[in-house]
Amino acid sequence: MAKNAYIDGRMHALMERYQAQPCWDALCDEFPILRDMNTCEQDKRHHGEVLVSTHTQMVIGELLKDPDFKHLDGWAQFLLFWTAVFHDSGKPERTKTEEDGSITSRGHSRAGASIARREMMIAGMPYSYREHMCSLILAHQIPFWLYEHEEAAQTKKAIMLAMELDPMLLIMHARADARGRICHDPEDIKLRVELSSEVFDGLGLFDQPYKFANEESMLAYVRRDDRHPAYEAYMDHACEGTIMCGIQGVGKDTWIAENMPGVPVVSLDDMREEMGVEWTDNQGSVVQAVLESAKSHLRAKRDFIWNATNITSDQREKVISLLRDYKARVRIVYLEAPIDVVMKQNSERTASVPDAVIERFLAKLEPPKDWEAHEVVRVIRDAVAPKRRYGSVPKVPTP
Image (cartoon, rainbow, N blue to C red; front, side):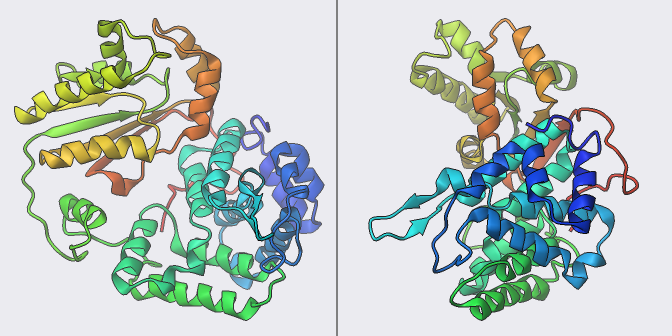
């Protein structure tokens, strides 16, 4: 764990040191989890260099010598450098040898994004910058296949990506990823990236995110297959459902009391206490009771708050679908605080949970994307003011 590696400037110094002379071992000393890549093998058909660590160093090398990289500002260079370092960090966790002898690593992008998020939280990287990096890692394989899809699917994926990351940075990483390997079809994989780049370029997404007519047009387009992005949807919401999101001890109850007093709250914790169910017990009856309570507000067209952790996209999706069924406006309020603050606040709660549970929740954490709801509010308490080595911290993502 590289505690405060960003805050103290060690990550900046490491990047500058690597630019002067590659120093993979130094990166591993700062972030020990990277060492797992030193012994993780890949399928030789796609990675003749075999080891994930070798591939990663090749990608970093290709990135650093890219003329376009040299023209980026310092913050963008910093973001892309560390994205390259962590982009395949999920492979050791997801790699397996199949019955036919091939080596696969399905799901490594998501695993890598989770690893990077955890490491950057400990390092003290500001939320917006960290999540831009995690989005790049999560999407880093997409430029290899985006162009293959039907035009409508290409368009939707590209538009959604441009709402959470800078497409040009994604393409720049993909170019380095394509060049930084030994494979049987190097020109094909490079061509794939360029064809996918044309998808973003054709939609004007290198200049700015897509401009929808209104918030309902955006959400309906993302969630339905029969909508064109230019369609102007009718805005007529029966009520508003606010979905709280954040791990235990982050301060959701306090935020509600200070910002939405008097608004009805549907709470898993409150329902557990009311029903005498421990958090370690089967939660089926609690969930059912909470659903019925939420439906009663929706049927009455009454604004209400759904208060639970909702830390994964799958958890939020269930609530969002319910709200959409009743034509409610969907708002997500995401709260985050430094890990040590969360641990302290959790220990002071009446219904506190063990630290090990908090750790598991952090490993699963998937902060909400802008395209998940009509509105996403983020209440972020970063560790301390970050080192401004390259000037003021930009508001990222800034596609």
